[in-house]
Length: 158
Length: 158
Image (cartoon, rainbow over all chains, first blue to last red; front, side, top):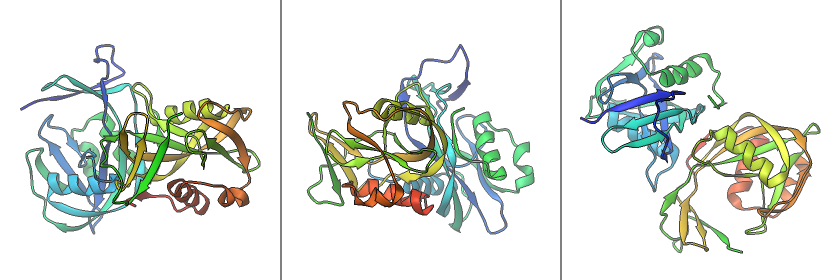
């Protein structure tokens, strides 16, 4: 299993050598719970997401990644904000890629499916909002979810 | 001068071979006019923008491109929407790059500078809102500006 290591404004961070447009999506069910995965690559909790492939739009990528990682089908309902801080560098130990953060965070609504783990998500859960912050989570993910919960999303520099 | 040719859902479009994250920004001045450029590469009117470089955030790229293309300094105030339709392909005749549309559109406020043409912008103007639609403009740019004017921005598939 390859590892993912996040660096924030860290002198030890590798210089970024790639910028891959990605999407995350905060998916809500009928009772207002949030769809969360426990990532296989670092054990942290996160909302589903991933890179946009050639031939698909940003919302299409969000819907595909959510289904792949969680088993849940969703539709896209809006935007939370943009998360593109060049001082956040993600190192993939498998190939030395040092990827500069570049994620657009959308909102979605579940329309079907059952929580189902995958290679990328060792657990999948509908999490009540008041339990979110008690989960182990990367700082950048906590920021994104807090912007959703507080309704303060915008184009973020840091 | 190399040319830029836009294809929309067109059987004659080249297959896309790149996806470059870009930004556009709708910059407003104190009287509510919109900052527009006439593009050097195809003669159409547009709001400023361009590709995000390694080492800069999305809002930083928006501010830099606006200054380069218009002479206007701005600050970023919000998000209009995402424009990532894979059926919109932009061919650059200089090198055969066929780029899939991927632009995030932000809003901004002018804080200084004077309209100044550049290599990429043969004219730069503050355009009153009721004159916008009379300018020659690519369909994808007209869509983005209409979402700003009507307040209907969101993550767009098409």
